[in-house]
Image (tube, rainbow, N blue to C red; front, side):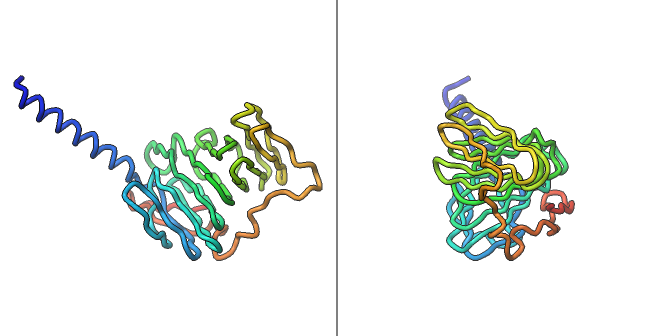
Length: 226
């Protein structure tokens, strides 16, 4: 093969690879079911406002301003409520067809969140913060990510495995109200009767109302967020 033909082949391969990367980055994974005040979606192509019904894509960052909040519903019916002055990266969504996922991962960079699992197998979910990794075995978790400190509270009577990344220490949450504080030094249980983190103060304007029905633009199926 001549050099010119080799060059054309290489350029074509590079273009196809770039197109594949762009398509992957633009994978639609859900939409905004509720939005209050200033909510933005940030991607490699720029920053844009997010409104009710607006799509969200893999690898995007969702940011909320002060006195702002949002509820995202993903294709497997997972709900993620995002409180004021918060940031989350939607970095791993591998759907196997239909409305279930092989892997769902979010990076809660900072702020307050309520994570409610959907129709996928519980082993598919992984939540990260700067200091913690959380394996979901239940349904609803309230999470506060504050840089070097993460607070996790179980809302329902199920389970979650919460680990300190640096200390390589893990604690299982089991039952409503069970709560831990995670730092680089390890995982500490919040004693009974001690105040613990709750997302409830942010539950206004449909942010925690999981009964909204949204349409999957790809298949037309209706997905009901919990």
